[in-house]
Figure 1 (spheres, rainbow, N blue to C red):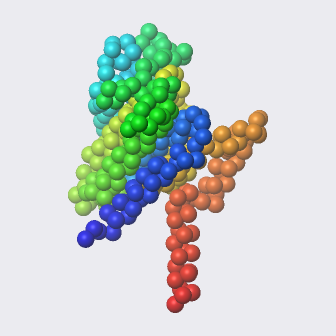
Figure 2 (cartoon, rainbow, N blue to C red; figure 1 turned 120 degrees about the vertical axis):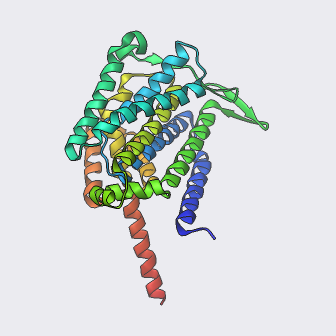
Figure 3 (cartoon, rainbow, N blue to C red; figure 1 turned 90 degrees about the vertical axis):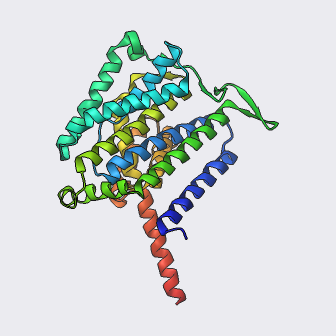
Length: 335
């Protein structure tokens, strides 16, 4: 018999898969598919970041740096040196993982705002390097990225494909590929959470001193989850580079790091499906507020502020609690 956590994990994955599968029924043009693909990529990124922030309790204000390194590594190696995209993405993830381990070991000894400042400085260094090394990265002007090839298929938004007699565009192909990647990212994260590693991370978040007392190697687990979250960011950065076809240093900027951390906090820290909701809201809200023109940013900030005031635990946990209370109240009335 499946244990409770496994049942909940499978239920969540099935619901997410059903939503992703049915979503194209409500999308009418390439712009909708473009937005949905971007949401899936950024959602997978923050699923990894949530392991670090939500479960281990470690703040990272420079995580977009890893996203940018993954994107530019794939861009440079595929466009300049002719590497194949998929192997390049994997090599980029290894390089970023090694970088995160080297950087993470010393800075994760810090706590509180000292850790925040250290990760912020790391992000700035990566962004400045990408911006200044124009001979390799194109500098502020950015650089183009060739399409992604998967099992002989060249994923390009402008191409037309046929599968089992069904004709569909490249934007549809990209959406389903990104949706599949998101499901895999969630599955991996949920397995990490429900493993001894996940329990060690939660103990570090609860009390690092108490975790050390019971024998948890806190330095190792903090570094490990930092590497895992960086690998998530690298893979999604590489994927985004091939999807967009053109990248700029903004991908590794401080503003992008703040967007990523806001997705985690808004959706609900320590909630895998919550951060997906956070990515959805944060990517769609600017589109909804576009009609307000010069008031757009003010409205955007006001909505985020009110959300965090009245839903301090995040959107998803708050909605879960309300549904649980309503269900409990109905059961009491029936009794």
